[in-house]
Length: 137
Image (cartoon, rainbow, N blue to C red):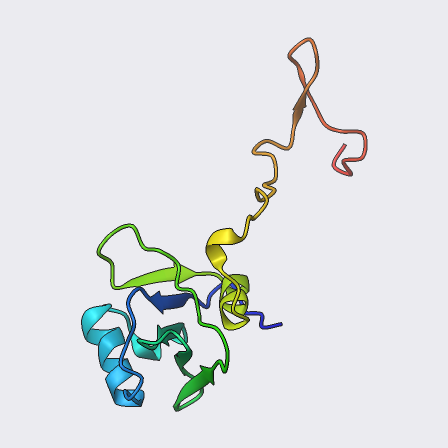
């Protein structure tokens, strides 16, 4: 499975793109249409008109890389974008599912766990106390 550090963002074109475009053509879309820095190290994904091809452009140590995939059966399903945005931000697991042909609109993600805002706990009388397992006690 592909994993990316949190600093890497993934952007997906909201509309199909001409798959004849190479490095310079895709970089021009990123820079001029999306207003992003193509040298940022982020991933920029483009799906073809027939939805059976995807190109992922990114900058890596002194050069651009294009990852190109064509599915022999089926199509990639682009998530719906509710505004007139030219790209949408997705997460690493979503990109993996997209590359596997999974329809992201049918996937349900459980709510993410978040740590409590306050580490101190209030007792029944309203006073603040630390949990017994807290080494700061």
